[in-house]
Image (cartoon, rainbow, N blue to C red; front, side, top):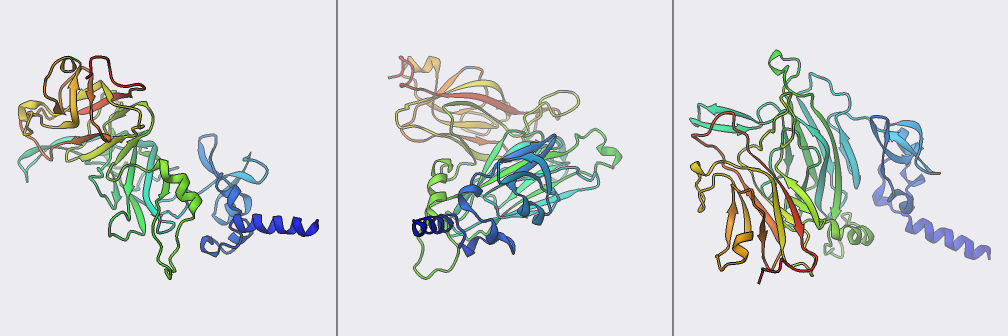
Amino acid sequence: MYGLLYFGVFVGLVQGGFFDLTDVEDPFALLWNFQPIRDKLTHCSIGDVSGICMEKAKCLIAGGTITKKSCGPFFTCCSLPTKCGATSDKKQAYFSSGSLNPTTTTCQYTIKLRNKNVCQVRLDFEELILAPTISFHSSTLNKNVLTCVNDSLHINPKPYGLPVVCGNSTKQHLFVHVNQTSDSISAVTIEINLANRLDPSSDKLPSPKWKIKFTQLECPLKRHKFDIFKYGDVENINNDFYALAPHGAVQYFTEQTGEFWSFALSNADSDNTLTGYPFGAHYTIAFRRPSSKSCIKFIPSEIKLLPSSVGVSPHNCGDYLHVPEYYTDSDLSTTTEPMSEVCETTSSFYSLVPGPFFVNFKSMETLTDVPMNGNFYFAITYQIFNSGCPDNVS
């Protein structure tokens, strides 16, 4: 009987990663590297301070502060230091601005990829408040430009048109694609550049704040027989599969209904006015399509893109949303050929495609003949139909 008990404990420790020397993050990690519990690490809050549920000993070694709030019998809510220059190889964790020094002008974070199977890093901006875009006349280009001048967030590497972010982009998200071709990426960096808030010219800028959650997602990868590099385990790969964005998509929405909007669209400034996206953006927004769904409907809440008077696209749009097989309600009852570009509309429209649901957003690098105080943005509700398209769709 005791033999069976010892055997069961041994199997549990092995499955828990007790002997997994590839996952040592500190000198004493083997004492608490218990996989079934560790995978349940969650975010917690202590008042206005963010924390992570983790073991008390590990919290102290990481330089964190143990709170009185419990996260179950084994964990405590650990308040970790939030300093610029932080590096993490966790599967999921947070970078937070905390009490930011007003003289800070650059803040960089590094996400070290856990293993060779990591193929995407999802960034969720649970809070991101930076100075909005500004219109100015570039004497070098002799054109008007709308861009992130005072504050900006840059991500590297930046495949597939990953945009520069500024303004209030709270509740937005991004996918960073890594190691899906022949590249060999070992880390993803987030660099936040800030205007000096002690400068008198910055007195009207919002106080910068951010709380960025990152999640490392793993893909299957063929392993060479004698390869000594660290690879992910099968359980993580299986669990991450449905969270992966389609290859090339910068944003990915998995719910059947929801809303998507341009970056920096928020009532971020003191005048309570909408702020616009920066120019020079070109990226793909994708939507999960169940096999039984046949079309997606888009309902504009706000669409104010660059006026068609300065357009250069086939449909005379300046900036536009490229929607494959685009139909309006009136088109559906006729034999009208489908369009593809949306720049000015208040009506609902549909995308009827046999393959993936996606929208490409394109904004011009520079422009002319547009008011300097112009802001451009979009906010659109989408709905994927449960049982086919409307009755008048053939």
